[in-house]
Image (tube, rainbow, N blue to C red; front, side, top):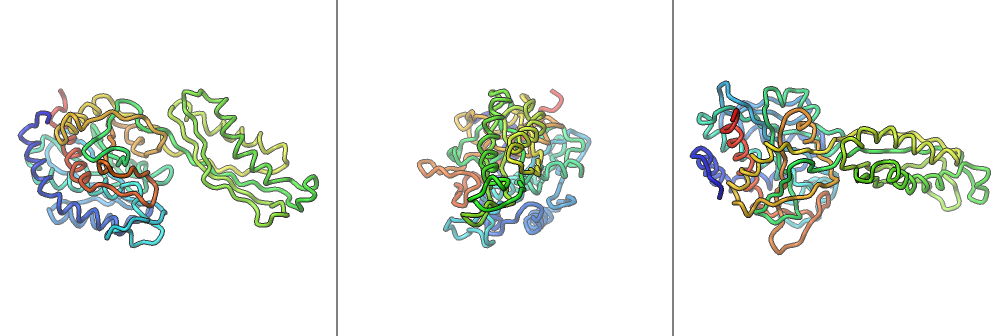
Length: 397
């Protein structure tokens, strides 16, 4: 283990003692998932537990809450977790599987929330010893674009904050391992929804119609191809469709069709130019077929870019909890994460929390069969608490 200050040792001892309670809390959240902007029960349960130890919480305007721990004029460090679940069916057989039809914590946000709660309770128990303050940010609506981070920031989540830290579950890493990298960790992610309209008709006479289905097929294949040639290939641009829909009869050319998906890339510079290029390209693709394209392009999130100093502090926190062998490097992904908006404003870092049982199956995020090794909950709480302590103890050095 890396060296621990006396304060950090005491905080981590409290985390260890809280772990059985945290597992029960996480299971309760998992059984009662809530979608983005509807995290009422989740927020209430978090606030209730914090109130039991005398912590006053500040509700955010559209769900979630803030709470400050510690007192005095010292530095402020923020820790963030996301509250929302996904509109997917829980396919697990655990006793605490989702009780809400079609909704599940398939991205591990129940783990994130519980880990932050545990870190907060432990830090509060030693609050009079903290050389500054820790702000807990329980944020709603991470799973939609542009996400709840912007609302939280507007509501004061980063007021006075010097650094911010977060974790994200990684079912590709064994429990006991935490992945970290300096610089870009995720990609930029936007959403794209295209509605095509035209004059439909009989499939025997496509020349008398505006062949919308053919135009839709060209759109879903040509847009990714064109962007791969017009944007720097090092930007890693990826257009993937989740919805392609048109028609209801095999001999009828429909008058309405839809394609919707995501536009992702590794590079923030390319992200700045992406929307204008996507719009222009779509219009050029569908124009020869006489159909009209109504484009809804929603800018989502920039890449998460870990700041070097914060990354170093978070790495020290990981080593303090799981040892030097538990800190591993991780690659940049194309996944979007609205934690990036916080890092646009203050230095910070995010790590990937291993949740795979060693030797067990590798699950994927956003799938209803996701299962996590619950030992990750205590590890996550310890890492977040340790990051806050390290950041406060080294502030100004």
